[in-house]
Length: 590
Image 1 (tube, one colour):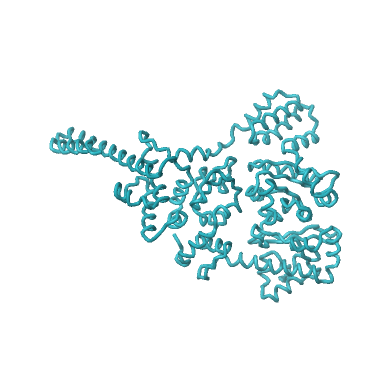
Image 2: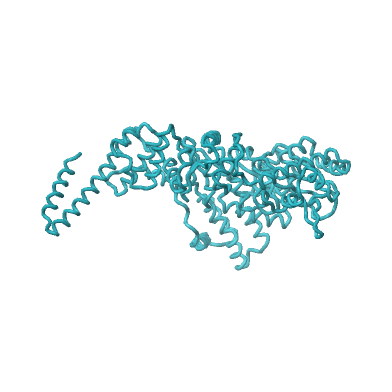
C-alpha cells in the first residue's frame, strides 16, 4: 500500500517519470521482442531468458520464478528497500522532490557518498596544487595521461602526511567515527585515527550512477602494497563493482561486447584511445556479482588479464564464472608480455580492436593451458584433461559448438568421440533442470478453449486483462456477471481494487500495483506480460463472459443433480420434485 507519509500524487509522478525499461536496463540486459523486452532474470539463476518487461503497462514479470510488479517493486527487491525508500530512490533519479518526513532513507548511506565526494575533491585539488604532488604529476605525464583524462577519471593525490585528509574533513565537521566507517581513516592502537591513503595516486571507484563508493591508491615508490583499496564499507564491496563501468556501459551496449582488464591504468588508457567498452575488475579474479553487472549490457565478455601464472589462473576462474552465468566468453592475449596499457599506447586502438576481435574462446584457451601443464600421453593425464574441459563443453549454448569441441578434444587426446560424449552425459546426470521456456508459458495463458477443464480459469485471466486495458468494459462485466464472480481469489482482489481505483478516476496498471499484495502483484504482472490473444477485444470479451457463464451453469447443474440423487435416496419426493423443476429451468436458459 502507498505509504501515507508520501503523498499519492508524488508517488504517481515518480512512477510516470521513471521508465521501467530504462531503470531495469541498469540491472538487466534487455532485448526487444515484440511489444515486450526480455532478459535473464536478476532474481534467480537461469540461462534461458524468462524475465519480461512490458513498457506499455510499466510492469515486469518472470515466468521462471514468478516474481513481478511495477518499477517500485523492482527497486524494492533489487536494492532491498522499503516502499517509501524505493519511491525516494527513484525520485532522486528522475528529479522529483520528496519533502522530508519522519521516515528517511538510510542517512548513513547518504552521508557515505557525501564524505567520499569531499575526499575525492580534496585529492584532486592536492594533485593540482600541492607541491608534494610533483612526483605524482610527473608520473602521470610519463604514463601519457593528460590533464583532460585525469579530470575525466577524477584522479587525485593523497599527501604523505598522516592527517592531511583527516584535518580537511574534520574542519568540515565530520567525526573520527564517520571517517573510519567510510574507510578513509584507520583507528590506531592508541585510539587515535590517521589517513588510510598517504603518498599515493588516487583513483576513485564509482557505482553505476557515478557516485564515489571507494578509492584505490597507487604508491609512487617501491613500498608495499603497490595498490591499496578502500576496505569494505556500507557503500563499497570490492566484489560488486567494476572500475569505469558507469563510463563504459553505453559503449558496451553499442559495441555488443565488454572487455575486462586488470588495472586502473589499463582502463584509463583504453578509454583515452577510444576503446570505451573496457572496465577493470577490482582485483585479479572476477566475482559472480561483477559478471551479473556486465550481463546487464552484453552477454559477450572478453578477459584481458596478464599472462603471468597468477594472471592465467585468474583468467580461467573468471571465464568459468562468466560461462556458468550464461555469457559468451573469450580471452584477449596481449603479445610479448605487454599489458593493455602498453599495447594501446604503442600499437593504437585499431590494433587493439583486432586483438579483441580475435579473442580465443574459453574452451580453446583452457584446453591449450591444460595441455601445456600436463603431457597428454599418460591415461590419467588424458582423463584429467577431459574432466577439466568437459564442464565448459557442456555449458555451451550451441549444439554445433559443443559437437565441434568434442571432436577437437577427441582428436587431440586420441579418444573416441562417443567416449567423450558419454563422460559429458555422466557429468550432467545430476544437473538441475532448466527453467521453463517463457514463450511457451505465455502462449498458453490466454488459449481459451471452452471444452477443457481449465477454461474458466483461463477466461478469468483473459477477462481481467481486458477490463484493466479497457475500463469501458467494466459496465458490461458488471451487468453480465456482477462484481464477485472470480473463483481465483487473486483475480477477485485485483478486480475489486481496480473498481475502487476507477471509481475515483483513471487507473494505470503500474499504479494499481501499489495497492496490491506481493502475490497479487505477481499475478497482475504475469497477466500483463503474457502474449495478447488475437482477435477483436469486444469479441474476446463476449467469449470470456460466455465461457464463465457456461462453466458456472455446468457446475450449478452438477450440484443440482447431486442434490437430486441425495433427495431420491432419502425418499424426499417433494424436494426431488423441486430440484427436477430447477434443473429443467436451468436447461432452458441460454
